[in-house]
Length: 316
Image 1 (cartoon, rainbow, N blue to C red):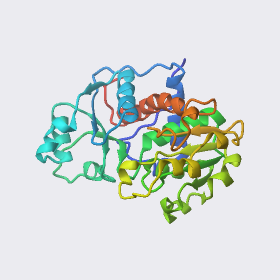
Image 2 (cartoon, rainbow, N blue to C red):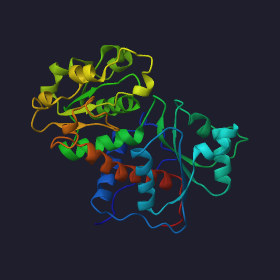
Image 3 (tube, helix red, strand yellow):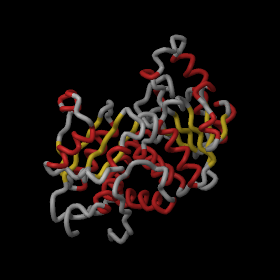
Image 4 (cartoon, rainbow, N blue to C red):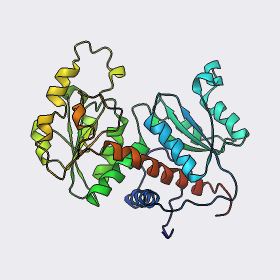
């Protein structure tokens, strides 16, 4: 397979807010190239990366590491619980130490929204020279999840124009919803929201319309379910997983009402029997495992864009 694509070049990969449609399509094309067996670039010099996850993660963390390995990038182990962060060291100073010993890329998940601002908006006295790839910031953005979702939708439908997409569930706490609603609208899809009304606010109204689950399902091309983030709802003593599933979840009965070409998506981890019936996780219209598979290839495309943008690895 010929490697003739024009590759995206970025200094950092922090948010989807400033991505143009041409850039999104370029990343999808590159990720699909990798998925089809396309060859990675040969770096003349080693590229060193660190994955810093300050929140628990399986899919995103392992997917980034797999992407790095497939690209031939060397990964330096990092455990927040055993690091000097526990002694009060700032994130900037931790990165300064890692950068000083040769780390050039940092993939970071952090509980604070826009944690990366202090790492990229440097003063004249600061010498940090490291590419930041945002793997999720608080309830803000999750660019890699959003882009792998776009890849999965593109793979199924070949585009986004006039597709009807429902985002259902824990909107309040979802960085996935915030990233996806923006890109989907920008790419030409029609966005709808559903779930408990008290999890919906006016910030979503700019991007789509709220409706009841049972009024939306049979019209949708994509049903995107969000994890109920129980850890962020500990004060809601009246919350019932069984009641949530019956009122807002994708039950077996609701599944039968979907259009035959419609697909189900979920960023994971899934609360089985809450967001969707356990029997539907691997159903024919579910793209849950496809999303995880696509995540490796999209993250390869994202990392490569920063490697290229920072001119790492020497000559190609």
